[in-house]
Every structure is written in C-alpha cells, then in structure tokens.
Length: 396
Image (cartoon, rainbow, N blue to C red; front, side):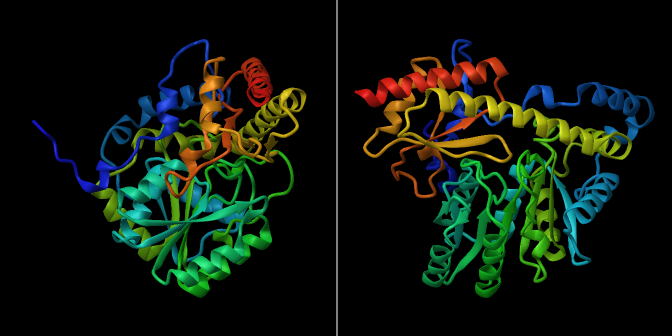
C-alpha cells in the first residue's frame, strides 16, 4: 500500500540530535547529546519516596488524575516560582505537562493557525522548530548575538510582518549557543512584544543551572500585560526520563492548553508528579540543585580547559555560565558538515549547526558541544580528540 501522509508531517525531518543518539558505538564519545548527567539524579531519595507512595498512596498514584496536574505539585511549583523568581499573578495559572516539549506543542496548538508567523531566535532548539513546522507556522529567525537577540532586527521583523503571532526565546543558557540574554535585552524584547501585540513563549529548562555570574530576572517576571507563556521542566533538575514539565500562563491561555492536553495525553504521569511533590516538600530541593550546579561547573571547566589546550586559535567558542552546552564556530570557508563526518570517524560525535537553523538549508560553520552527558574522562578525551581533528582538518 502506498501511504499518503498528512502535509503537516510529510516534510518534517527527524531531529538530528535524536538520530545521532541512536549511535551506540562504544568507541564514539557523545559530545552531541543534551542529556543531564546520570550522577545528577537523586536516585536514593527517589527510591525512598517511591516505596512510600507504593505503600501509602498507590490508589492515587496509579489512577487517572486531573488534566491540570497533581494539586500538591502545582501548589509547590507556583509558590516556588513566585517566591524565588517573582513570577505569577492572580491572572496566571500553572499547568503540569509531559515535559517541556509538550509545553511548546500546546502553546503552538492553541495560539497559532496554519500560515501565521512565529518569530524565533536563530539558531534555536530543534524540538521547538519542528513543533512550529508541524503546525504549518511560517518561521522568521532573528540572529542571537553574545548578549541576546538583535533587537533592531527583531523590531524590523515585527514591522515587516504584521501578523506575527508568537515569539520563541530561551533567554537563559540558550540551546544551542549556551549564552544568556542580558537584562536590558529581556526588557527590550518584552516591550517590543507589548508594542506589537505578540505573545512570548519563554522556554527556560536550564534557568536553575547557573554556575557562574548573577541570576537575571525572567521575562515572565516582567509580565504585567499577560503576554508571556513560561515553560519550565524538571528534566534537568530531577530526571529527564520522568517527563514532567510545567507552564505558567495567563488563565485564558492555560485553559485552552488544558483542553488541548486532554486531546493529547489526558494528564501527565501521576506517579512521578507525586514523587516530585514529595521531594520538593520534604527534601532539600535547593541543596540538590546546588550540587548539580557544582557538577556542571566542574564538567564545563574540564571541556573549556581541553579546548584551550588543543583547539586551533581560529576556532571560536562560547563560554557558558550555566546550562549544558557551548557553541563552536569554524573559520570562514570551512566545511562544517564535512568536519562533523571527519570527527565521527575519529570517535567523537557533535551536532552540526545546520540542525538549529530557523531557515532550513541555510549554511552554518558551527557545531554544538555538550559537557553534561559524558563522564569526566570522556569529556576530556572527546574534546582532545576534537582538538586534534580540528588541527588536521583545518591544515588541509
């Protein structure tokens, strides 16, 4: 039988990162992943909590829950966002979702019709870009500079495209760049979106993972006009596999997202919602996050030291203050895709920069590195292999 697929999926390409992760060759060091470090998972505590749930609340944990999420977890998260980050008003609602990816999907589902424009940072998270494409949105990219989006280019984009519906941004430790949007630009982005009537989708899976510098207020904390949909995740601070995220959004938007979720998965995994709630209420959640920050400071330091020792001087790279990634740029004229294959043959995987381009097919001289997933030894060895490969490749 010849299958005729829906237009929304027919031209959608698989995630380059997911495809790379299918490579299970033990001789290849994966600097391409975006997974949290296994040693960051609070396994002993989660085992203890799981046993308690099995013994005392199994009837609740394994039954259907409400779409909006486990009430105790919603309460704890909302209180934390308000007290620690100054987010949330009486006009906002908090919704538990199945990972940050579902938050992006639901926001797009309820806000954007086919053919409407979404403006995104460029480069940007491939999972978000593919979601936007799957709903038939037209994408416009605005280049990200060292301190955030090019604000003049952003306003020009709004002026030239009067039907922009939504802006997508990862202001803190951006994926793939690893950079952070400064406070001045966060305010400028918010003010422009108010001026042009554009909803902001603020994606912040890495915000808790700052290990250098000072915290910067979220865009959502500035939201007096009800235009910001804020997405958070437990993937990087508890466990990626539990698939628990959350959304803080104006009540009218959250209500529509709830209906959209009911048409998708009914509700997020009840057992893991309860486990996280118990951990947040009765264990040292902030202390746990501090340990993760120290871990990633150490691992990023190992990678940066190896980069400084082995990379040719003409190769540029970002220096992250948090998160999981850094971004490398080859010199003018270098063939990035050829280089990615070159290093793979030498036992290292990296993600080609073209995977993150808003406009598909646009060339790139860049690639993304991850320091959280490999062991310390593999971070060092993989980066050194990469440096040696760069020396050989650029000498040709």
